[in-house]
Image (tube, one colour):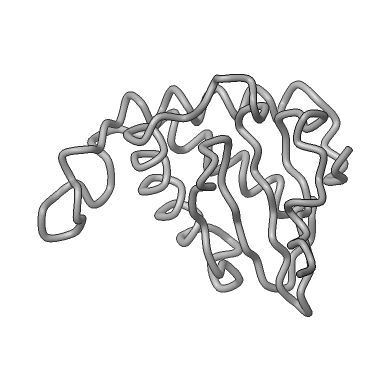
Length: 150
Protein backbone atom coordinates (compact mmCIF):
# COMPACT_ATOMS: atom_id res chain seq x y z
CA UNK A 1 0.00 0.00 0.00
CA UNK A 2 1.31 3.46 -0.87
CA UNK A 3 2.13 5.81 2.01
CA UNK A 4 0.23 9.05 2.29
CA UNK A 5 2.33 12.15 1.60
CA UNK A 6 2.55 13.35 5.21
CA UNK A 7 4.18 10.04 6.22
CA UNK A 8 6.95 10.63 3.65
CA UNK A 9 8.27 13.66 5.55
CA UNK A 10 11.21 13.03 7.89
CA UNK A 11 9.59 14.21 11.09
CA UNK A 12 12.93 14.16 12.93
CA UNK A 13 14.07 17.08 10.71
CA UNK A 14 10.81 19.02 10.85
CA UNK A 15 11.02 22.42 12.51
CA UNK A 16 8.16 24.64 13.67
CA UNK A 17 6.77 26.78 10.87
CA UNK A 18 4.29 26.75 8.00
CA UNK A 19 4.55 24.31 5.10
CA UNK A 20 2.58 23.34 2.02
CA UNK A 21 1.72 19.74 2.79
CA UNK A 22 -0.03 19.01 -0.49
CA UNK A 23 -1.94 20.55 -3.37
CA UNK A 24 -5.03 18.83 -4.74
CA UNK A 25 -6.39 20.78 -7.68
CA UNK A 26 -7.30 24.19 -6.30
CA UNK A 27 -7.06 23.08 -2.63
CA UNK A 28 -3.80 23.63 -0.73
CA UNK A 29 -3.24 21.89 2.59
CA UNK A 30 -1.01 23.87 4.92
CA UNK A 31 0.87 22.25 7.78
CA UNK A 32 0.88 24.77 10.64
CA UNK A 33 3.58 23.11 12.72
CA UNK A 34 3.58 24.49 16.27
CA UNK A 35 5.90 21.93 17.88
CA UNK A 36 8.80 19.80 16.72
CA UNK A 37 7.66 16.19 16.41
CA UNK A 38 8.81 13.36 18.66
CA UNK A 39 10.52 15.52 21.27
CA UNK A 40 7.94 15.11 24.03
CA UNK A 41 6.58 18.68 23.80
CA UNK A 42 3.01 18.26 22.56
CA UNK A 43 -0.02 20.52 22.57
CA UNK A 44 -2.42 19.38 25.28
CA UNK A 45 -6.06 18.78 24.42
CA UNK A 46 -7.49 21.87 26.14
CA UNK A 47 -5.01 24.13 24.33
CA UNK A 48 -5.70 22.51 20.94
CA UNK A 49 -9.44 22.69 21.47
CA UNK A 50 -9.35 26.32 22.61
CA UNK A 51 -7.09 27.45 19.76
CA UNK A 52 -9.20 25.54 17.25
CA UNK A 53 -12.33 27.43 18.30
CA UNK A 54 -10.60 30.79 18.15
CA UNK A 55 -8.58 30.30 14.96
CA UNK A 56 -11.41 28.67 13.02
CA UNK A 57 -13.79 31.52 13.89
CA UNK A 58 -11.36 34.30 13.06
CA UNK A 59 -10.07 32.73 9.83
CA UNK A 60 -13.64 32.13 8.63
CA UNK A 61 -14.22 35.85 9.15
CA UNK A 62 -11.00 36.94 7.41
CA UNK A 63 -10.36 38.35 3.95
CA UNK A 64 -9.96 34.76 2.65
CA UNK A 65 -13.06 33.42 4.40
CA UNK A 66 -14.71 32.26 1.17
CA UNK A 67 -11.67 30.08 0.41
CA UNK A 68 -11.34 28.38 3.80
CA UNK A 69 -12.18 24.69 3.57
CA UNK A 70 -11.00 23.38 6.93
CA UNK A 71 -8.89 24.15 9.99
CA UNK A 72 -8.25 21.47 12.60
CA UNK A 73 -5.70 19.75 14.82
CA UNK A 74 -3.23 17.04 13.91
CA UNK A 75 -3.68 13.83 15.83
CA UNK A 76 0.02 13.87 16.78
CA UNK A 77 -0.62 17.07 18.78
CA UNK A 78 2.15 19.08 17.08
CA UNK A 79 0.08 21.43 14.95
CA UNK A 80 -2.93 22.05 12.75
CA UNK A 81 -3.97 21.66 9.13
CA UNK A 82 -5.43 24.57 7.20
CA UNK A 83 -7.05 23.82 3.84
CA UNK A 84 -7.49 26.77 1.51
CA UNK A 85 -9.01 27.01 -1.97
CA UNK A 86 -7.18 29.13 -4.59
CA UNK A 87 -4.38 29.77 -2.09
CA UNK A 88 -1.63 32.36 -2.41
CA UNK A 89 1.12 31.50 0.09
CA UNK A 90 1.94 35.09 1.04
CA UNK A 91 -1.74 35.96 1.57
CA UNK A 92 -2.27 32.82 3.64
CA UNK A 93 0.80 33.59 5.78
CA UNK A 94 -0.36 37.17 6.35
CA UNK A 95 -3.84 35.92 7.23
CA UNK A 96 -2.50 33.30 9.66
CA UNK A 97 -0.40 35.97 11.39
CA UNK A 98 -3.33 38.39 11.55
CA UNK A 99 -5.59 35.69 13.01
CA UNK A 100 -2.99 34.81 15.64
CA UNK A 101 -2.64 38.50 16.57
CA UNK A 102 -6.42 38.76 16.94
CA UNK A 103 -6.43 35.76 19.26
CA UNK A 104 -3.63 37.24 21.39
CA UNK A 105 -5.54 40.54 21.60
CA UNK A 106 -8.99 38.94 22.05
CA UNK A 107 -11.20 40.37 24.78
CA UNK A 108 -13.71 37.93 26.23
CA UNK A 109 -14.05 34.19 26.35
CA UNK A 110 -13.47 31.47 23.77
CA UNK A 111 -15.90 31.54 20.86
CA UNK A 112 -18.51 28.79 21.19
CA UNK A 113 -17.98 28.14 24.89
CA UNK A 114 -21.41 26.81 25.73
CA UNK A 115 -23.15 23.44 25.87
CA UNK A 116 -25.34 24.45 22.94
CA UNK A 117 -22.37 25.32 20.70
CA UNK A 118 -19.76 22.72 21.69
CA UNK A 119 -19.71 19.07 22.71
CA UNK A 120 -17.00 19.61 25.35
CA UNK A 121 -17.29 23.29 26.23
CA UNK A 122 -15.80 22.82 29.72
CA UNK A 123 -12.49 22.08 27.99
CA UNK A 124 -12.05 25.62 26.62
CA UNK A 125 -9.72 28.26 28.08
CA UNK A 126 -8.96 31.61 26.47
CA UNK A 127 -5.61 31.97 28.26
CA UNK A 128 -4.42 28.68 26.77
CA UNK A 129 -5.51 29.78 23.29
CA UNK A 130 -3.76 33.14 23.68
CA UNK A 131 -0.52 31.59 24.93
CA UNK A 132 -0.38 29.08 22.06
CA UNK A 133 -1.27 31.74 19.49
CA UNK A 134 1.55 33.96 20.78
CA UNK A 135 4.00 31.08 20.82
CA UNK A 136 3.26 30.17 17.19
CA UNK A 137 3.16 33.80 16.04
CA UNK A 138 6.64 34.28 17.53
CA UNK A 139 7.84 31.26 15.51
CA UNK A 140 6.41 32.62 12.26
CA UNK A 141 7.83 36.09 12.89
CA UNK A 142 11.30 34.78 13.74
CA UNK A 143 12.09 33.06 10.45
CA UNK A 144 11.82 33.09 6.71
CA UNK A 145 8.82 30.96 5.79
CA UNK A 146 9.41 29.28 2.43
CA UNK A 147 6.56 26.73 2.83
CA UNK A 148 8.87 23.83 1.82
CA UNK A 149 9.39 20.77 4.00
CA UNK A 150 13.00 20.01 4.90
